[in-house]
Structures are given as C-alpha cells and as structure tokens.
Image (tube, rainbow, N blue to C red):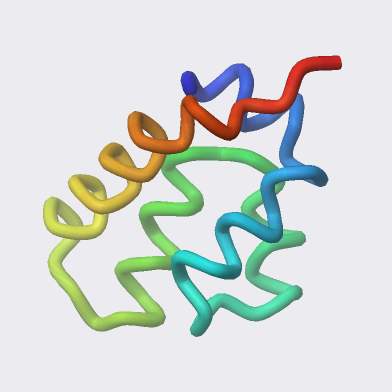
Length: 72
C-alpha cells in the first residue's frame, strides 16, 4: 500500500490502524487524515518511541497491509 492509497481509503483503513495502534484516539485519527508522516508522528507521540522506530513500524504496516487493500 502506498501513501496515495492510504489517503484515498483512510475511512476504511481507520479500523486497521486502531487494531495496530490502540493508543491512538479518534481525534488522532481525524487529525492524521491518511497522511503517513502524520501517522508516524502520532505513533511516536502516543508510544514514546523514537521517530525512526515509529517510521519503521508504519512502513512495515503499510507494506504488510497490502493484502487487505480495499478496492473501489
């Protein structure tokens, strides 16, 4: 999954994000609006991890989530 897909299908993917990072609030998800960098920042903030570690987690999720990619 790439960032364009993330932005385009954000409403459908919110549940998957919440499953993966349960500490993210609904307000966090509304602020992210499908932006990968925003997601990295919120994961970093909520889980108290280094930015590069949060980026690796989000990148892995984006890569692994291709099997659940939603098509219109």
